Length: 227
Image (cartoon, rainbow, N blue to C red; front, side, top):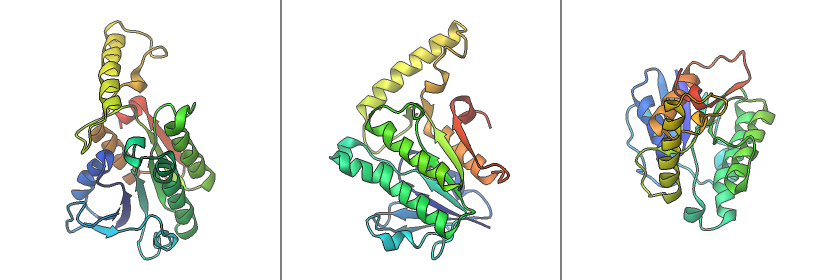
């Protein structure tokens, strides 16, 4: 039996991860949520109200809350956070706190993190935050899967203009590169928009079949579509 913990289960990727785990045998899933009744619970899926501002809460991971695999799908936008400080707290500080406590309490766990394409050359507050989390993960020596999708497609609770417009134009560019057989090195394949459900399938597949003889893996571009 694998004990899985998910943070960000009500979000676009997290909800798709949860949908897949719902029908997966021999797993139990604990979702950490700010408010009750955020997800649909089942026999193998439960939620725990979690105060992300209290250090005592984090100490439960790996002790009171068993954890073999941790899916970190948490994230926000500057508009929703209303300040850069609040944004950093959600997208950078919370994930790093989870990395630190899992390393301490259950160092053999697998940490699965949603990052972003472009993080290897970060520009701006969003990519910089993702980059800092990635560095914390690899420095921790935990086993890891870092996922770097481009613009995510799927039904959201909130409308995001930048991602909608960006997804439209990137899709057009990707179709043109394929139509004219542009060399992969010059193509936009890894920047092509991708369905959140596809990303979730790659995450769950690799997490449940992870080979711990390797330290970790980074999934981006075609590796998110073929597994």
